[in-house]
Length: 74
Image (cartoon, rainbow, N blue to C red; front, side, top):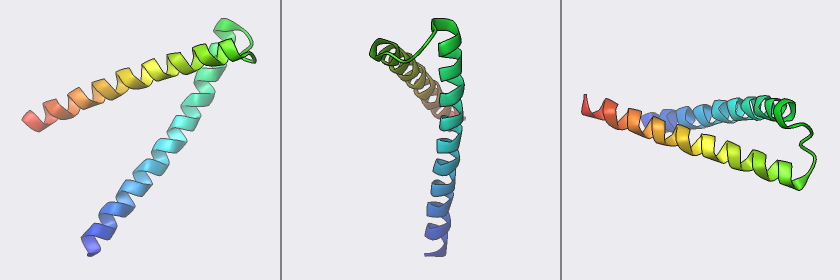
């Protein structure tokens, strides 16, 4: 039971730090987006931003998945 609690706590702490990092990157990416594309106030700008962030997130997830598979084979 003690190991299970530690594992769950580890998962929660990791998720919390992941959320903090995601929020930090969100602010950074928004600032870059505004600098490159101008104001991000309109729906079209927000949609483009969401699509760009989604594509980056998918690419990162695929890259991490491949790294995990490669590490498992070692």
